[in-house]
Length: 391
Image (cartoon, rainbow, N blue to C red; front, side, top):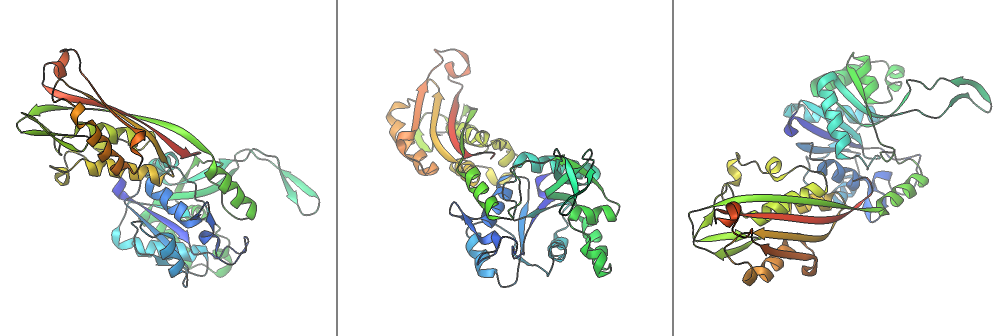
């Protein structure tokens, strides 16, 4: 399933009555960011969606604009009086785009991760629908003030979002549900139930305990704690380009005079290509070829700087901070030493980090191999990135 075949629909039209407070919970701030922005950024940085659209409540337009400022999203969609109506409004607004799949996500679950979304898309493509869910592990009791019965927990799951479906099927299922009597509509508590009623096969995909729904002040504190917990990830990259015609090479964003150039679809900056892969690898986000395929004419002759900035944006979108960068250029010529400080300065600007967190080194292969024969240049890069837990 190609990325452009799936659109994320984030439902943020509720008032969060159970949580209370002066503003709806999706606009409450945790660690300086609204819950809605956290949810939207998570969806964007999974890399699984062609577009992200948000369903909002009438009257929340100003709060919405402030929350998502600077993010690339489809126009907001006005929700309805119920979540089910809001979802239907969202689906109807996407009908003209005719996506193959749609991922319906609650804004109140802001900690979805890329691996879960990828699994949901795969299973929805196979079955027609798929939901994130957790197997029930606790003993269940039915009752009011006292126990009336014990409920068998085998084969029971606790539903989460995202819930991913083939678009045309879930749209028609919601349209059919909208025609039901009020009592029957009210009994449909999630999109999977709407899908089940329409005969859509829905797969269960193991969710994550961190993918919880914000419903109480305790949940807000839990979210804050998770966002404050950090871990270090390492990413590495390696790239090679052959020499060809030209009078200079681009290395780590610096134009270096040389008797030959490097051959590549873009500007062939071998150092930046290795660094791009290292940054993407640190957040498990593929490689440079997936984001900037050489078959795409848009990248012919392109400055590799934009590849690095794109990868660094994804790191930041995951809540990450680039701790340090180490790039090694492997070649006999040209000499790197005279350009080292300029390269460090350019990289610091690209990555928005201090120059003392960047190392650029050069080495040779003692005349061995293709670099030793002067046939090209290789580069390897390593980065360390500090991320919130579970990103």
